Image (cartoon, rainbow, N blue to C red; front, side, top):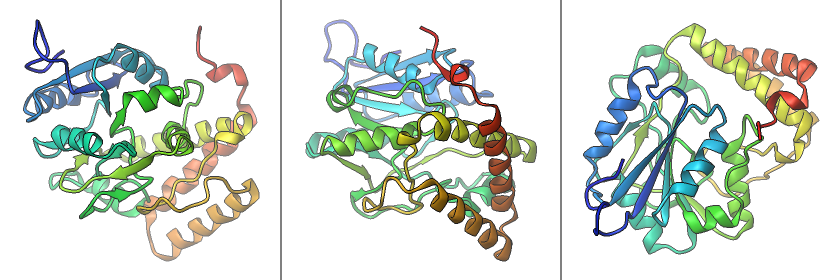
Length: 289
């Protein structure tokens, strides 16, 4: 689907919007997202839906291969956009700053968020991000709403198609190695909510633990740190025993501060990790060729 000004003999798109989607619906949220996209002030964009691929990384690579614009924008299929100049500001940031290869926006809690989603986003690190007043180097630029230079995306080899979890940290690490900045920009935002029911939240936390165990067992070199605040100064890799001890500390903090939802996600993640580490096989996540 092209935005106005992208067809016939008209100018090429400025932005290629890539949306991986398993079922083309996302519980009815994808059609709403597409309607929001149509209202964006940046008319010169194209939208590429990649439907049915369970591997987010591979789906994004397919979209990038089809993209005609110099700038890519990945969106989660259940995301909600903020202001109508969001696309325009992201494209302007990349155009004005050649040293920036990835630009994201804060994930804010919407006013109409259900109570459970609101509580999870407040309690669990990285579920939402603080707004910024200026272009800020940050590890909180994530695939949910992430603009990238197509040239740099290709230079670093694109997305890692074998990782079931940790695509964001992997890609950010490769971009940093290539010498580019990763930022969050001011004045715009988007909304990406966690599951809105306790069973859904429990299932997500357990699944994340299973997938993390697979990565730790077979690809430990790509298990990368993810700081909770805006920063570009952090150690990308730490020893596994240290991470285990830190995790235990987080459990204690969540208990002492009565952050019950955070505690629940930590416990279920740990259960999923132990289960996944004991049962994972390399073939279970190898992509079909």
